[in-house]
Length: 111
Image (cartoon, rainbow, N blue to C red):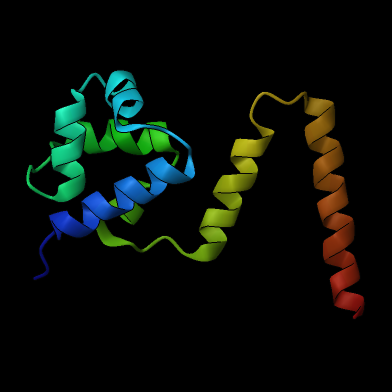
């Protein structure tokens, strides 16, 4: 049986937070946690509750399994990035984007 590596969990949280350009203070604020607590989680010196992991994953737009197990594939990450980019866009823009992706996918088959 494998155990959660809290140091790796903290590193992945830090990685996702930095990628999003967010400070520990801001992450703590949006997750209702102190900056010090975020720092402890990122160093692996505190074990976060499931609720805390859920809030952090939601705010950083990463999956809980990626945080805990590092099992999210690169393809999953691409889809998550696309989803983030399309948030708030009009339905017409999303449909145009999907049509363009379909056209590109069809052209890949021709190569």
